[in-house]
Length: 233
Image 1: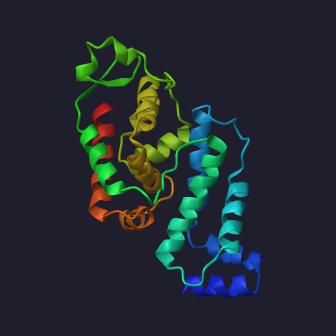
Image 2: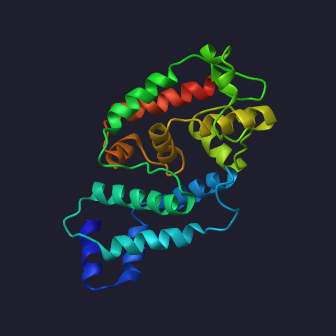
């Protein structure tokens, strides 16, 4: 079992081999970190190429090494790695945490799913809005959301492939803006699920373990996002 092997390496204070062993546990963790940094760059939250995914990964693995508990279960180790990765990125992007133990994520996701059932349309700028807001001038005072969001094309490709959207999406500037805006406007807990699903290539059951929510809820969120993106794209 990997946790026993890691514990032995921790007892030997062998971080070099600990790093190699834990890297093989979730190979997609680096991609997950890289994609989240990439999106932060696209949103203008951080400077391009200023932060290196490898440096963040080093910090994550070192934190786990220094605080490794021999009683940790495999699923808890998986959760810890993603949790620490998000925390490290939060520190440099000043974004909200996606993994919190003191809230009922299931209830929040139910609310987010209900919100995603609302009827939307798209305005002239490529932003999507509620039908009921069309006659409300206040919706134009749209917080501080960037007006046009273009994601890196490698990110777009991952999203469209994983969500089974047509590649034609990437051939239109308007569609690219819609994709960026849709991704930006996703409810936060639902976005956490989609990021794990798309960028970390985690299965429904693995996401369920990481976020401590029912598999059925994860499936429902993934299907709802696919439906919503497919509707506009």
